[in-house]
Length: 336
Image (cartoon, rainbow, N blue to C red; front, side, top):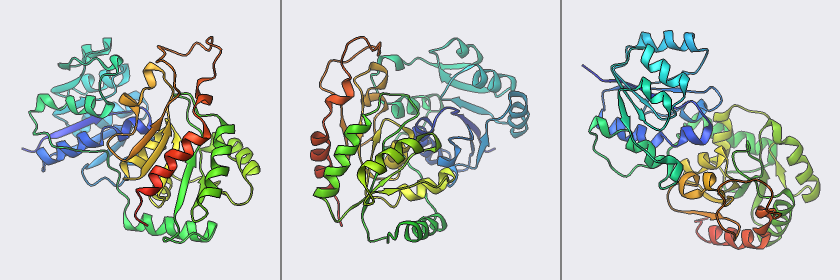
C-alpha cells in the first residue's frame, strides 16, 4: 500500500522554498507515495509546477481544511511550521504518524517529536527541515532548493519581457528587488539608488530591472525617478508563478532578506543580498542556501534584537562601493 504523506508549511514564500529539498529526498525514498503539501495561498505558487508532489492543498478556514485533509486519509504528517492550526489539524484529522519539532507547546498534538534548537541559529532552515525526515528512516543525499518553470511559463515570460521592455533572451539583465515584507532590516533606499547608478555606468551591457510587490510600488517609483529612464521597472501585478518565470530569465538577483531571494536561489541564479547582524536574521540560518551567493552585512557585532537605541543605522554601514565590488565578482562568474 502506497504511503500518503502530508507536509505542512503554511508561512511565507522563503519558508516554503526551504522545504523543497525535503520534498526531493522524500520522493527519492518513496517514489510511489502520494505526497501533498499544505501551504498558504500567498506562497503556494512556488510549488505549482513541482513534479515531485502530487497535490498542493491551500490553507483555508480551519474546519474546511480539516474536512479536506481528512478525506485524503494520510498516514503520515510532517509539520515543518508548528502552530496551533497545524498541530490541531493533523491531530483532529487522525493522521497516525505526526512528526514535527518539539520547540512549542503545540507539539502536544504530535506523537513523534524531534528536538531542535532553531533559536540558537546553529544550522540553516533547510537542514532543520531535512532533520524532520529522520523518523521515516530515509536515505539522505545532497539536495538543494528547487523551483520548476515549465516551457509554457518560460515562453510567456520571454514574450512579456520582449513586449514590455524590448528584452530578448540573449540580453543579460539584473533584477534589483529593494523591498521586503519586514522580516529583516533593509538596505537603505539611498544606498540602492547610488549602487544601481554606479552599476549601470560600470556595466553598460547589462540592463537593470527594479521589482517589488504591490506595497512596494511607491519605493520603485521613487527609485526610478532618481535613476532615470535607463532602469527598467516591473510595474504589472502578476501571479507568483509568472514572477518566478521572470526571475528565471535574469542573470543575477539582488535584494534584502526576502522570499524572492530564495526563489532566485532555487532557480539556480547568482545572488547578492544584504542582511542585518540580528541574531534572528543571520544568513547562516536564513540566507541563500548553497554556493554561488554573496551576502553583505554591516561590520558590527551581532545584536540579540533591534531596539533602535544604539544610535547607529546599521544597514547604512554596507556601502554602495562594497555592493559594486560584490556585483563585479558575480558578473565575472557568469558565462555569457
